[in-house]
Image (cartoon, rainbow, N blue to C red):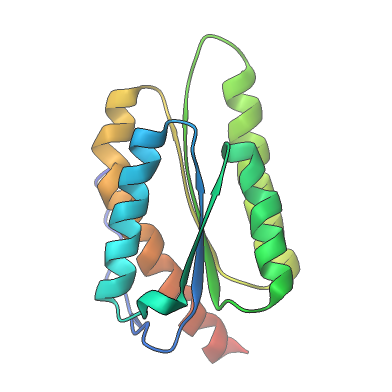
Amino acid sequence: MFGADKGTAQLLDGKKLSIAIVQARFNEGITNALFQACHAELLALGVPEKHITHVSVPGALEIPVALQALAERDDFDALIALGCIIRGETYHFELVANESGAGVTRLSLDYQIPIANAILTVESEAQALARQTDKGRDAARVAVEMTHVLAQIG
């Protein structure tokens, strides 16, 4: 929900973390802004530049397979999915939104690795533009925080 109370984040020290970002190129202006905000926030949280890997894929449906390849490498503490799906005139929007989201969630559960899902699913380009920076930053914060949460649990 836009403008929702997200609470106070805890455990945001990224100094010892290695994180990979998978960015879809479809709606590239928006996904570039998501990436820039996410990358800047990871650096602000202390994640070393050399420990941030960036992978580009054609669209949101290709994000899960790239995430899976990265998860299988076992080199990363967390992964981040960045994309933008804007509703069009056909059912394709629902297909892409549902399948990409389900794929990201399934991989996180199967590999027990935090995956911050910042694949925007919006009604219009205006909604995407309004969310691109905040959601990019949020993804970085979620990835770092969830890495620490899972370490505490496990």
